[in-house]
Image 1 (cartoon, one colour):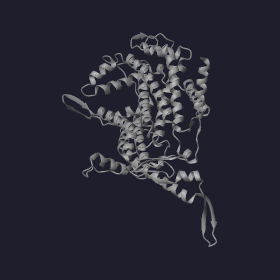
Image 2 (cartoon, one colour):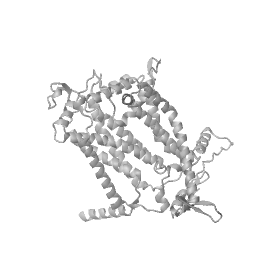
Image 3 (cartoon, helix red, strand yellow):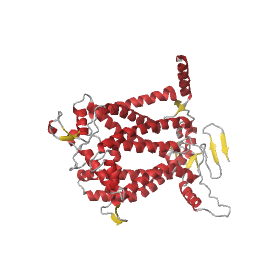
Image 4 (cartoon, helix red, strand yellow):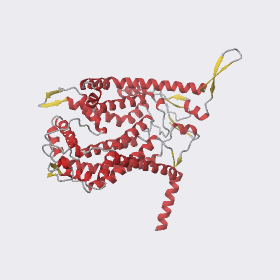
Length: 521
């Protein structure tokens, strides 16, 4: 048995050593995300042994004098015990919180890196869905954990959640009673604690599914590596040791933040009080876009219809945020349908080579950024001594005007970079050396590009899909829409000349570099 086990390990290591991978920003950020999850799991298990998820009131008799004799919930009392009376408790709690703040940032950067490089294209569309699902689950885990200390800050946030829930027409009151288990605050701590324990299980399942999916589809190849013919590094031990080193550094940073940077000092906020709210309260940064969406809607947007009050000041933000997440989820499938792309892609793309996609990504990021910035509009107003209303007005205008302007500007910049690439491919790099010719003129000496760079800079346009009529010579509405969107997306869309070519009449895959050519008709 032992010999068979050792043989299996040798076979696995041999398989891993033969597998080649390339280091990309997405893979680097994936290591950071996985490390944050491990830190959250370890610190969370330690916190569970002391934390009491109960809204029942007790008298505080701990070491913090200003709260002596105060009526607090068992949840708040246990958090105070963890923070001030348990050896290493404050370090564990703050490291847990810092990991919860870093993980969404890592996922957002991973989404951006994957989107702008085209890493979501076939056969990795399912991987994109897993990444978006992971982001949503992390937001849910962070939101549920935000309220568990039951301090004044989290209590204010829960008041906002209750108000938004009650504003939902028809089902708002029922949903609020179900979520809170009665009148505010009800049993919200107990309910959120159950969510906070179940969500990590789902996150772990998604991470495992993503790892299996990555193993089956294989790693992506950066465009520069494909141009130079680089085969990458061995998954074992080279890439594995690099990932281990990155994980160790991430863990060290999180532990240092937990030790040196105070976050959520519950003793300063005091216990939650249903009759009071905290001034200047802010959600954790990753939930700011939801708070900001509520702030940007003009007040008084409501009407009476079907015997219910329809509060557009709440419904519109929910619809906008929901539409943003839907667009984020379906974009890979929409692009594939628009371009008629049925080919597997393993080589990443430069953002400049897909101007429309890059413009859409920048516009979508701007929408998120404006909503996120609106969450701190009051802080901006007080710090810079401007009126709160003027800050909100500027953000409202930016939310409407900014995305189309950002799309157009980004697209023009990408096209300009393409023209610059073509000039370098034809004339070479400028050297700054000016020489005089025999005829008396002056010219600048250009350094020729090397073959690998030439393959990277020499591009060909990617054609849009041709719309075909039916047997009666008519175009359906869907085909017309597809042709219109495809022609717009194909404007300026190019790929390296030696790369995989996709045309409207045939889906052809060209192995790049040095591989065999395969055609599908």
